Length: 458
Image (cartoon, rainbow, N blue to C red; front, side, top):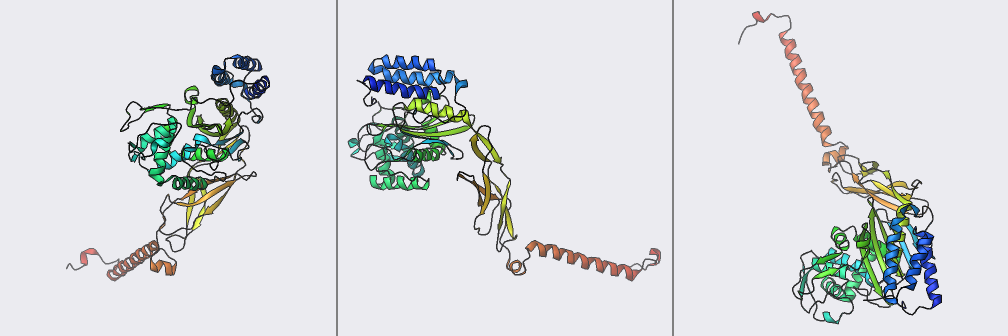
């Protein structure tokens, strides 16, 4: 089992420094000062092999007992955060709630597998069979112990990659989807760029150390946010333990998640842990409380569980969603050339939410950007976007859809500018007028004063 670098044989100065940082962060998480001191003293005096475990246990339990003491307005103290870099974002809007050096390139370790798992889902069906390459045993570190040419379904391979962090599973997935590691790495980088990641360069599929393999906390959060939109991915990463089906090695079926917060915090629903000596402990996290999902990323942290819980507690204590527009609200109109109508009304496809500090109003202002349309236009078709921006430069894009359908106009209608319905109605009115006038002439011919009894029968 991997352990923290330099955890044994700490000097007194190093121990005191660690205690000071942990104490500051414990206070920002809502711990009473006395409780924090007692907990940290016990941790410092514990045997070296038990110190890390006891520290994590105290950090996870104590904040839950004192929810009323969570910070209400102050940002987390960057000096107290164990992680070198970190970010908190709202999953629904993508708004950054807090960050610490979030754009600084860092080694991601196994959090790389968020992108690997996402690409595996996007390029394979759940029952698609993946065959392990013949050189599979050359892959080191965490493993599901694939045998050369062993066959396993994509669904079961995904369990192994995201729960056990199987490096050999990543290699098999990369070779199946990309054909080679360089080709798959390019797919990873291209997909990251699509998400807006600007400080990412992947060189492999599993995150084993490579000096040309890096990302940043913000980019990791973007990847995590996108991956959690996929139901299959979300189901996988919120699972703590799963028994897979495989062709060989029937004694190795249980995949256990490295994310221990899944057991300690019922609101946690993902995403991925990571560790190498150069990267330290890394983590991409997700939690959902009262329907609001928060995505976090932290890198090179001595106590990632403590960091994660403190970040979540702060975010949920200080931020909330506000609805600024509703599904079906008018967004604008899109002009149409050659249609049965000169334009189509656009309405919002969904409710528009903003994530704001509690007690404050949203500063988002909307403007409609119409799309270039081709006829026919169907009701419910995306016809543009509402772009919401605020003074910070944050932008939220919400699709707008057609409120009605618009067909292509007939050649005559295009020449005259009239729709077919105009001619149908006009023709009907004309025929009605002819019929009425004909009936009137017949009535005058027979005369109204002639008694019916004197009319000669035919």
